[in-house]
Picture 1 (cartoon, rainbow, N blue to C red):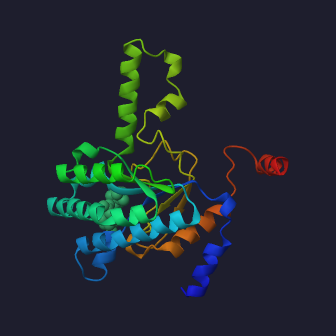
Picture 2: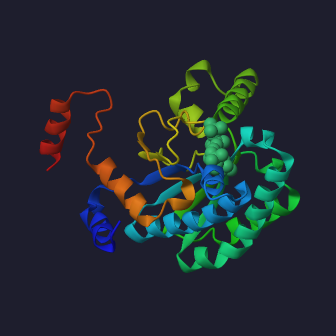
Picture 3: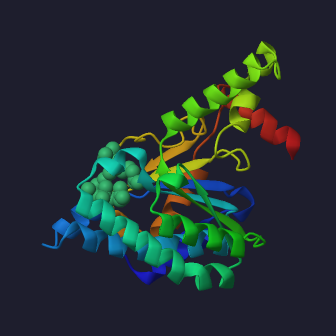
Length: 259
Ligand code: IPE
Ligand code: IPE
Ligand code: MG
C-alpha cells in the first residue's frame, strides 16, 4: 500500500461519527511467525508493535475506548512454554509501555480473571492502572484471562446471591442489572469489533456486549495490522447502516429529524 492511499484513509474518516469503543481480537501471531520459519513467540513479540500502533492510532483520532483481547481463559490450555512466554512478554510490555501511555494520556484498564495471572504480572498491571488512572484521552482495556461465558456466569451468581438475600426482586434482574454486573460495567458496548487473521468467530469475547456490534474481519495477521488497517476498518464501519432491528426507512427518517 502506498503512503498516499494510507493518508487518504485517515482523511476520509468522518470524525463526528467515530465509534466510541473499538474491540479487537488480535489473532494470527503464531501463523505470521510460522510463515517466516520463526517460532510462535516471535509472532507474539511482533504483535506488541501492532498494539502500540493501534492504541496511538485510536487515541490520535479521538476513539475513547479500545479493548484488546490479549489472553483468553481458553488460552491457558496452550503448551506451558507458550503460556509462560506470553506472561513474560506481558510483564515486560506493561513495564515498558507506561511512558507511551502517559505521553498519550491513555488510561490502562483490565477485564478478566486478573487474579489468575502470575503475581508479578498482576502487581505490574495494577501499578500501571493506578499510575494512569487520571488519564482522559482514551481508555485502553486489556482482556486478560478473559472469557465471556465466565463473566456472564459470575454475573448470574452475583444476582442470584442478591436475590436470595432479599436485596433485589426478580424484576430487578434485567438487561441493565446484568450489564452492571459485567467486568465492562463502566465501558460502553463496542460499536466495532475487529478480528485479524481471517478467522470468522468471536472466541468467547464480549458476547453480551457485542449484541449489536458491527463485525469486521481482515485476512491480515495481527503483527501486520497497523494504523492504516485500523483506519480502513473504521471507514468500512462508517459505510454501514446500523438498524437495530428497524427498517432502513425508519433510520433515514431519524437522521432527517435530528438534522
Ligand atoms: C493471537 O495469536 C495471540 C493470542 C491468542 C495470545 P495466536 O497465538 O492465536 O496466533 P495463531 O492464531 O495461532 O496464528
Ligand atoms: C482468541 O484467539 C483469543 C485472543 C486473541 C486472545 P485464539 O487464537 O485463542 O482463538 P481460537 O482458538 O482460534 O478460536
Ligand atoms: Mg489464534
